[in-house]
Length: 312
Image (cartoon, rainbow, N blue to C red):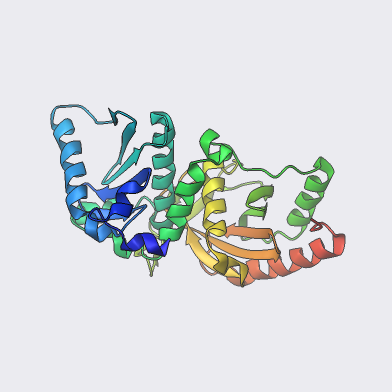
């Protein structure tokens, strides 16, 4: 992907790409581009913002533009504007779905509190907060072009004998600490087993402590009733942990917002590989929950090895 960062509208290679996707602010500042250095796209971002504003001033909302084999689709989400330009034969609904997932992935990094930032300063440069996440966003776009689960809004599930899946569920349940909200066992980038507690948080009180590196608050949760983890949130988790090889090297701890679960606050994810192609993701609302989830991971990994459940 790094070679694309050197491209710009004035380079021949940039124009040859068949699908471009852009994210910009309502003030017309470029935030992200699938190809090229977004800092070189300020004039283009200004044109897109002007087009959106022109239609908006007439009392309408621009959804898409067709020009021969090209499709240009727009998605406005508060202060964030997303646009896709494709000549790959994608339908308008397909491109709109990809933009919706891209917006959700951005929220998974920043939470919906990003809107408050733009309320204070409409010209804020969001690229600083998104620094280092280009790989995650670009991986999501690449998957959206052919991943059946993303096209259908479904959970990417690995085909597994029911008895083996049930046994994995028992092992996850036996190792579950009180701090755990959700546990996901992934194999080859697909869901193998999902563990959720009997009661999970539904609502957030956005008065909790701020996450220092992002400047965004982490909520206080209240348990109400059991709900499943939405397929869209599972897709975001899968894309996040499979888009970087760094997660394979050691146990990782990262804040992660699940927009369908609670768009205004972070959960915290303990990510580790318990086998070459098997990843364990443990989610908690507690920012200091790493030691407990790490101990859970060690216990579960030992049990899985002992029971032989990780045989390929």
